[in-house]
Length: 199
Image (cartoon, rainbow, N blue to C red; front, side, top):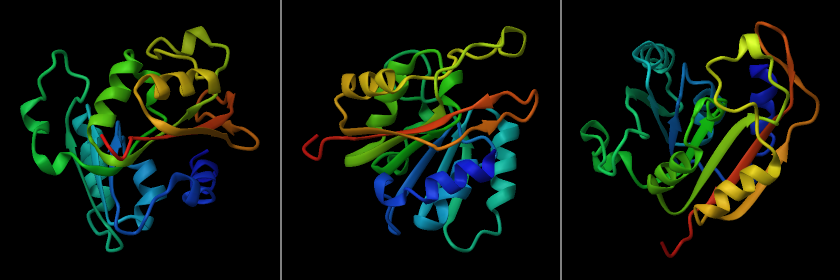
């Protein structure tokens, strides 16, 4: 599954718009799947995840990486309230060229808030990228912790447009991937939107 998604992203680097000088925010980074796919095409990746175990796995994975800088920290961009959590208020955690969520979007309850908070981390003209599953029927006994059972193209375009993003587009990967366990087939998409340059 990871190999196919990585190949899909790397085949569409120009569509994503990533450049060798870019700073990338990998939100809900897990062990760094998205960073591994895109990092070599950027200068720096900053992971943020709720789980200290995932952050530890990410940092261990990229500790010896020489092609680009990568580190992760524990944090919640979707914390209640309008104020920025203290550990996420460092100016270095803003003005990213690319902010991305890889296969974690379907776990997020408040999608509108997520898109708004990630947009706020972008520089003017920066890109938001979401990689996740196309809308599918739920397998109830296996998905008690899943907030959404995939997303339609229309839903993603609505979310991005509602947040004021422009140049919105959705690509669907050819074929399907199999979930690790249980092995349900899934279609994967990438959704892209850009913060207005004048914002």
